[in-house]
Every structure is written in structure tokens, then in C-alpha cells.
Length: 132
Image (cartoon, rainbow, N blue to C red; front, side, top):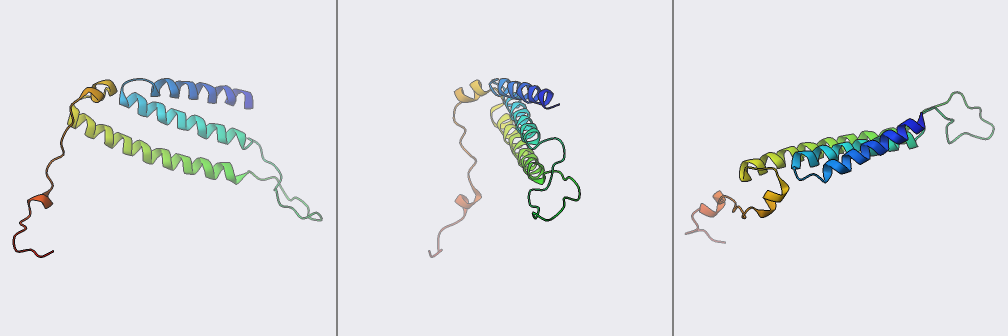
């Protein structure tokens, strides 16, 4: 089973890197997410698939039952949450880039002229008679 998962991790990593090298930003984001899933699967596989004995057992104590290692599960759960947050941020960032520039092609965005930000409402406040 581990051999199959090793090939799956390699395939997911290859697809993720391929998509991240594409010029379209949505493909980059999908590749980033696929590469993150490959890393999660790698951590899961490295943490062993079956149950094992607890690491801290007194020399005279008896092992009651095998347990699952909680560390890889906690790492994967944290990575899933961080990946979801980065995906949401990337979607919003790319949406704003599409609105401002009209494209999500990275090469076109690099050649686009600089877009000046809208003036801040604070800049328009009256400053006469205000002591600093």
C-alpha cells in the first residue's frame, strides 16, 4: 500500500509543479493546492498507515492496545487549514487582478502599466484649523 501511495505522491507533486509553471494564475493556484495535497499525503504516509504501540510505556507496564500516531494527523489538519486560507486569499487576489487588469495571464500582467491606487478619503479631509 505504501508503494502505491508513494507513486501517488510523486504523480501529484509532478502535476502540481507542472501547473505552477503555467502562465495562467488560476492554473498556478490549482497547482499550488495539488502540491499541498501531495505534501499532506506524504506526511500521512510517513506517519505509518497502521496502528503502532504507544511511545511512552513504563518498563513494567503492559500495552493495552495499539494506537494511531496523532502527530501526522495534527500536522495534516493544520496544513489543510493553512492551504484553505491561502486558496481563499489567492482567489480574492486573482479576482482583484482580473478586475484591475482584465487578465490573469502572468506574462500580460508583467507587461501591464502600473495602476495607481484610488485616492484615499483621508487625503481629502480639510486640514485648515487642525492642530497637530
